[in-house]
Image (tube, rainbow, N blue to C red; front, side, top):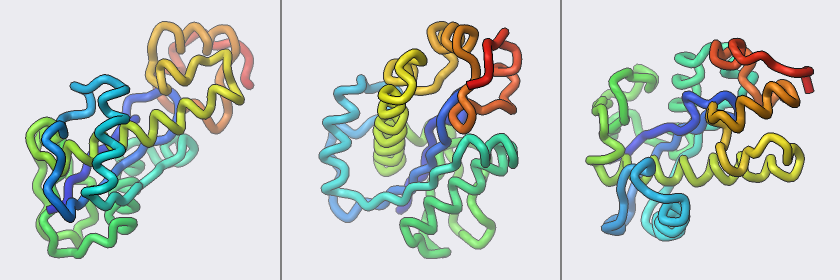
Length: 190
């Protein structure tokens, strides 16, 4: 079975990451929905997961999200993740959510809202995706320390919105097409 989950869909900044996961051994018992775990718990489980699973990553840049729209970006991310994992067209795929973003060539796709909390391989994809994207966003701290990416990792927190008002939108980092971002009284374009 292949599990698929994403992270970063609702962010104001940073890429979308879709991850497809397949286990080649029994998963650790601590696997759970990434949202129910602390950052340190996710990091610890991540280190274990890479011993038990293979992962395919489907990164979608802010520019691709702005240009294509979120639904098309999700389809692109799912397609990239499944290709990166070399998923066979007949393998069973469980996707967290209610919308099928997988290419029609995949024949056994099951959609399940809350799969990231109920299906261990989807939980594994959820944790892996969250850790990888958080690490990416944290690395932006060295280039843009005033934005606080290491703490909000791109989500629309009050601190992030205040940074946007003070310092403006970062080209290629912020999603300029997102309505919430357009509603913020922004400072200069960076």
